[in-house]
Amino acid sequence: MQSQAIQNIRLDSLLDSSISLLTAFILGGLIGFERQYRQRTAGLRTNVLVAIGAASFVDMACRLDGNEGGIRVIAYVVSGIGFLGAGVIMREEGHVRGLNTAATLWCSAAVGAAAGADLILEAMVATLFILSANTLLRPIVNTINRQPLDLESTEMTNVIYVIIDRLKEKVVVQQIIETLESHDFPVSHLEAHSFGQNELEVELTLAAHSVDGEELDQIIEKLSAQPDVRQIFWSPSSRD
Figure (cartoon, rainbow, N blue to C red):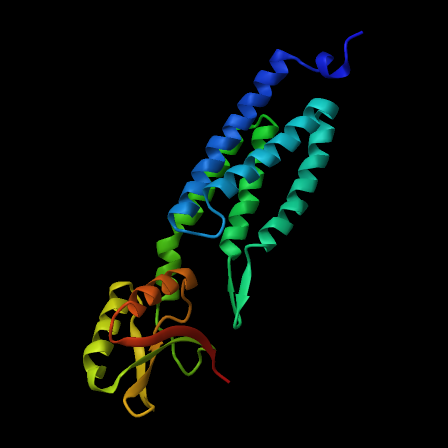
């Protein structure tokens, strides 16, 4: 008597599953590549694994229990991926980061589920829209976020704090402002305060009311490498 495992070996089903998983691998890779290129928390491998995992579960359910089984598993995938997405969301000083990355993981799971359900073209179309949302809409979002608003009515501002040598204030501050403006982060307000005997604390308020925290972190890291910058960091600031 043959074992159940041997009886379940069917080349036609294996080929179908391979196509589904390969589709999930390729499409998840396309989504993940864009995330990896922008150095997000969940990059290439994470998005690929999410897509393949969703495709595997849905493919197994469809094979064992038909379309009804696949539908039930898809429902679990939709809810279960939320726990994974929550792991990439961070809250720092009232500033929430990672929402877009979590949403992308959710979309990768949808692409994988479609591939597992043998909806190959639908999975491709979904991938196209996901990539469009993360690339084509990005300049529009940045343009809107970086429009200076009426500071009296703006509840949240973003301030960069710099500790520098008092004698080199003008040169260093000008370099920082030029660097920020080259990355489309214009400064709307500047204040300087004494910090010890030989240093100053300079506060640079950005005109943008909303910023990409990860992008600004990278700029701050580059500025901190300048020899005349003693310390630099940024923080969102609420207006009462």
